[in-house]
Length: 151
Image (cartoon, rainbow, N blue to C red; front, side):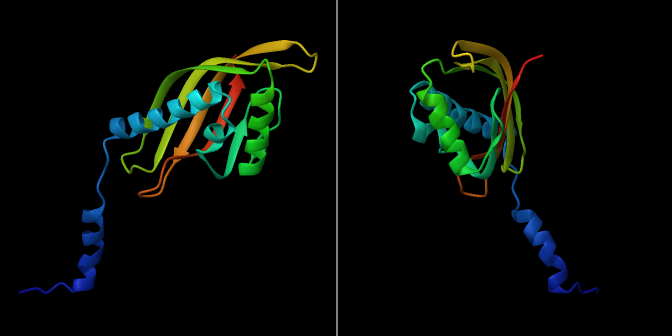
């Protein structure tokens, strides 16, 4: 009879404990989190607009440099939410989620409206991509969000 050392079986036990999530259910959860953020933005609720960003996240909107990190993203949203012309109308697009339940990407298209340097309201058609991550048992966090002018 051949004996297999117990330590040799340890990796198999670890792999057996790694479940896989239903990517559609994961994406549905992420979309619900995203929708709550969209509602906060529409209500000009700064706390609700920024609460989903991870430390070190990157946020980009047209006509501004990228904001990196919580303080910079909060400052950017503060400026946007106090802009009387600001409006972000987005229609969710495609998305995907990893079966590992730790990574998801959502897309959207829409219009970004803000006060331009001329002092007039400017509307820019945008394409948006948001990358979400989470650690086991933690809430979903945005690690990068880009709203770029649509071509």
